[in-house]
Each structure stands twice: as structure tokens, then as C-alpha cells.
Length: 196
Image 1 (cartoon, rainbow, N blue to C red):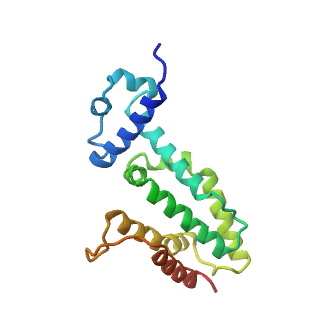
Image 2 (cartoon, rainbow, N blue to C red):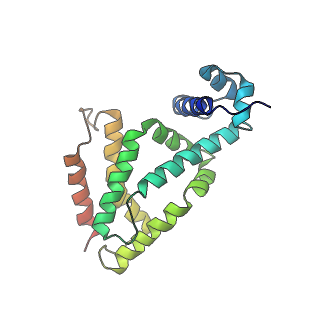
Image 3 (cartoon, one colour):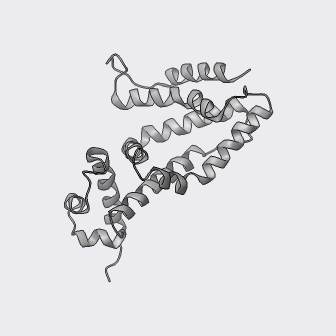
């Protein structure tokens, strides 16, 4: 039986992520992946049982890494403004540091794998964020609104700015880089919208 080579396994993951972003799920296959990695198809089956197993494992790993980083130095007990600021910092930091992984996550979230990957990677994060939301409302640090509206207002502006940053241009095609100043300006408007 062949042994696992962690360097090869990492290469397979990185190439798979790149290919999923470039070609989508429909254009992604084990033969293509093996060729990109310079390994035999049999080597891939040391790490994954099939294409579906590979996609699920990569998606769950990206999700778990994202949610773990998002919760770094964060507590649901934090005052609302401090906690939301930490969320913005953590989310922006991850998305700017791992753009290919984020792009891959987006591809897979908009696929038939979405429910599975959310269920497998979202558990601790979901409970923590619900507690943060409820604590802020109970302490009257935030206006009481539905969770969906909260998410749209609290994070929508950040994600829009991060998309502009990733593309290097804003809506009008003007050059764009997300700076601390721009991020803070958007954050302050979000706080005005969500606080009493």
C-alpha cells in the first residue's frame, strides 16, 4: 500500500482549488487534476475516494479555516461594536490572505455541495454568532432586527468592498484598494445603522 506524502497532498489541494475556481465543478476532473499535479490518477485515490470526496473535503477544510480565523480573539460576550469590529478585521484578513480559497468556497457554496459543506463546517461558528447577536440585542447595544437583515447590513458592505479589492477596481472601473480608512468609514456607517 502506498503511503501519503503531505507535500503531494498539499499540492493536490492547491491545484484542485485553482482548477475549481478556473473551470468550475463541471470542468473539474480527477484526470485533469492528476495531470496538473504531475502525478498518476492512482496517487489521487490515496488521498480521496473519488471526485466528490475530494470536493467535499477541500470545501469543509476551507470553511473550517475561515470560521476558525473569524472567531480568533472574538467572544460572543464582547460589547457589540468591539465584537463586530473584530469580525470585520478577521473576515477581511482571511479573505485578503486567501483569495483563491475564498473564490473556491464561493464556487462550491453555489453548487449542490452547499448544504453539506455548511453543515460540516459551520457548527461552532453559527452558535457563537447567534449568541453574539442575542447578547447585543439583550444589552440594547443593537436594535432588534431579524438575523437575515442583520447579516446583510453588518457584513454586506464589507463583502462588497472586498470584492472591489479582489478585482482591483470599483463599480465604475476605477482603481480600488481596500485601505483601513475606507474599511473604517464603511464600518462606522454600519454601526450607525445597527445601534440605537
